[in-house]
Length: 138
Image (spheres, one colour):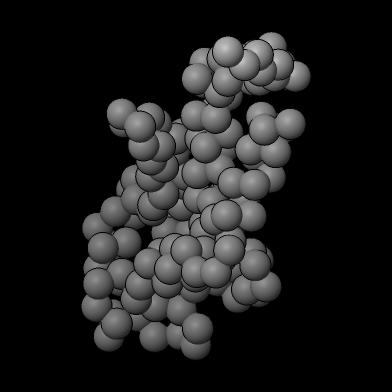
């Protein structure tokens, strides 16, 4: 019979309990929220190197309704909702879906979809997650 001694197992058990206890889920909620904030910043202009707003701006009513909701857990998934709306909801749909409804350089249709796709490329999400998970995984 062989005896095996594992060093650091107590520390590992504590970390595992924290992970299962919600630290990882909270880190992923923070990741989702930051992703949403950065995506919205691109849409409104001023995020990730984008200076001009992609969302159409005439009087600013639509832009002022841009929001990122608090992330929510659904089973083992974390979801975040970003969008424009409120009193500008009919206008938001009108200019988002039909390119001919708004003409201004660098803005118009897909003013939320394009920033979301940009933030989904490369290692952007992974780098945000790494930042929020780093304290949990120490």
